[in-house]
Length: 179
Image 1 (tube, rainbow, N blue to C red):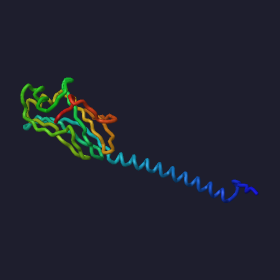
Image 2 (image 1 turned 45 degrees about the vertical axis):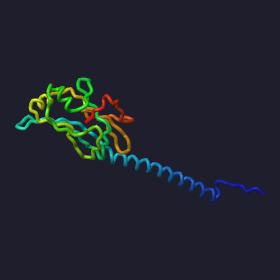
Image 3 (image 1 turned 135 degrees about the horizontal axis):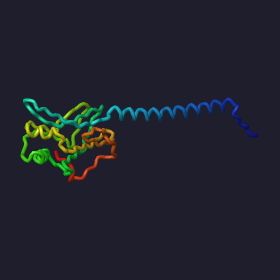
Image 4 (image 1 turned 60 degrees about the horizontal axis):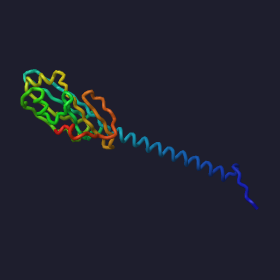
C-alpha cells in the first residue's frame, strides 16, 4: 500500500516552515557578514592629504605637509614628484632646479612610509627666505602619492586632495621619488 503525502499533512507543514526559517536565517547571516566586512573596511579607511605652508615673518619658512585625515593607517607605497613634466628624484635636486643653487632644508622620507590615523609629516621644509618666497608662488611641482589601507584598497592622491581609487600602486623606477 502506497503512502500518500499531502501538503496539508502536519509533518509537511512543520518541515516547510523549518525550511523557510532556515533560508531566512542563512540570508540574514550572509547579509550580516557583508555589513561587518564593510564596517571593518570603513573603520580603518585612510585619507591622505598634501598641503603647503608658508610664513614670511621674522623667521620665514616654506614646507610641504602630508596628513592622514582618515580613521586607519595609510601605507604609502610610492611618491612621484615632477617639475615641468620632468621627474624629480630628491628634494635637493628640486630646490636646485628652482633656485639655481644648493639650498639648506630639512626632509623626511615619504616614498614608503606608514602614516597612522591623524599623523602628519613634513617631507620638506626650508627656512631660506628667498627660496621660501619663490616656492610660495605656484611652483609647478606635481606631487602624487599612492597609498593603501590594511585591506589593500589603494588610492592615488595629488595636491588637489581628491583621492582616486586604483587597483594597485605601480610606478616605473625612473619616475619614483627616492626620498
